[in-house]
Amino acid sequence: MSKQLRADFMLLLVTLFWGVSYLLLNLCLTEMGPLTLNAYRFLIAFFAALIVAFPKLRNVNKITLKYSALIGFSLLFVYLGVTYGVLYTSLSNAGFLCALTVIITPILTFIMKKERPGKKMLLVLGLCLIGIGMMTLNEQLKPALGDLLCILCAFAYAIDLLIVDSAVHKEHVDAFQVGVYQLGFTGLYMFVMSLALEKPVLPSTTGVWIALLFLAIFCTGIAFIVQVVAQQYTSATHVGIIFALEPVFAGIVAFFFANERLYPRAYVGACLLMAGILIMEINFSAFFLKRKTLPEDKEEFAVDEEAQRLKN
Image (cartoon, rainbow, N blue to C red; front, side, top):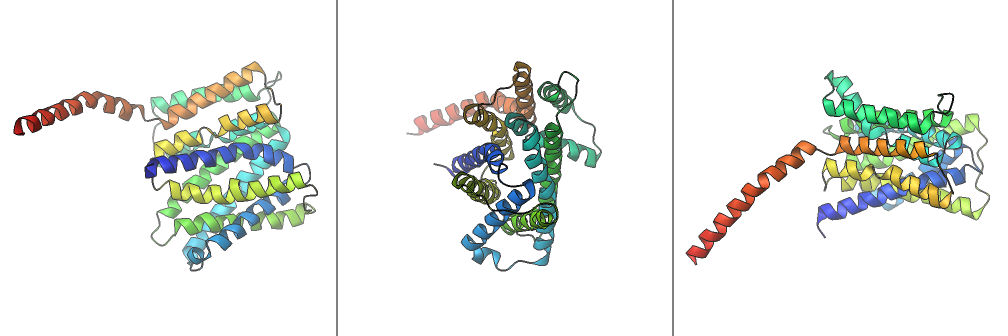
């Protein structure tokens, strides 16, 4: 198995973990407040990573810690949005709306660089706006509070990705250390807020303990670290398309394990969102250019083969 194929498989596994996480969040929220849950989730993930990779984390510079603290602060809003969003909307809606990050990130990039959006961007925006409307608007044309919070989560995560992109290209910033220390800072922020706004409690049942540990270790600690490492061996297009499968996994898990059923128009809206995400991530011009040049490559190969035959 090639390194790229192995990396794609690991990213697919990470995406599956994130798809399952919405159901686990819903289960954990039956016994803990959102702030307490996220505090435990990130702190457990951080200390687990610290134990496993301590030699790589021991020598950390101030610049890496500064960016880790900043990224952790942006993740605070990401996970506040998704956790409170799950409380007030369906698991399927949460999965699809939080995945809008892959649309919002290039939009923010366009705005920051003051570039005019192209036809592809306008098409994707149109599909997503219609899809969001069909998934979230009720008969009074009002979205649920949870839907708005999940969209806020997607915006916050887009900002987080832009900060991460800036950080990892700094000369003295260690990407692996940022991936771990951001977990610690996010957990610390959540814990302080939980002390101020909630009464932290531990899970009281075995099922919730298992859900919490799975969230912390697999959906947070391993997922964040694997994402950073795997992206070194695969293309950005592969990563985008694989991550676009997160809402699909979330919807499947909600359908089979939470008995969640949506209105038919919501499923149509979900399909429009998925179409927008895939159109955004696939480089069609490069794909067709590759296909166009393929016959020439075959012709060159045939000439080389004939020359080799004559030589022999």
